[in-house]
Length: 105
Image (cartoon, rainbow, N blue to C red; front, side):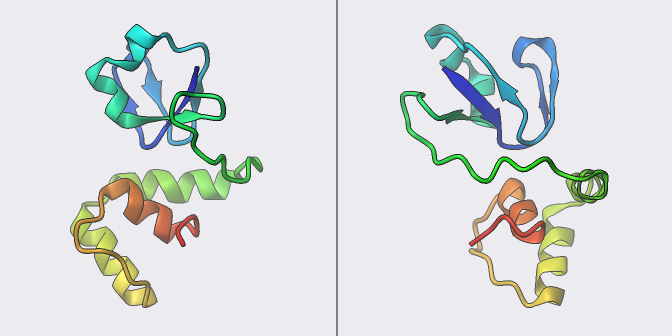
């Protein structure tokens, strides 16, 4: 099964995973590891997840995302408030970044 990193993390396969990076051929045993909370199945995995538009992201977008990853949830919520974007009170950091980068609903 293939999985995609939901947010930047380190540990799985002793590697730094960037947001959206895909790990191929993940075994059932690997999928049960605690690090899997940072990933989601892609395509033909056990839990079907719709794959968003897979257009390559620009260097500018990568810079924006890396800047956002370094911000606190409070700072990210303040940015959303400035833009008038609504968000649920219990949203996680990945969700906040998704909303800020235009990936949210």
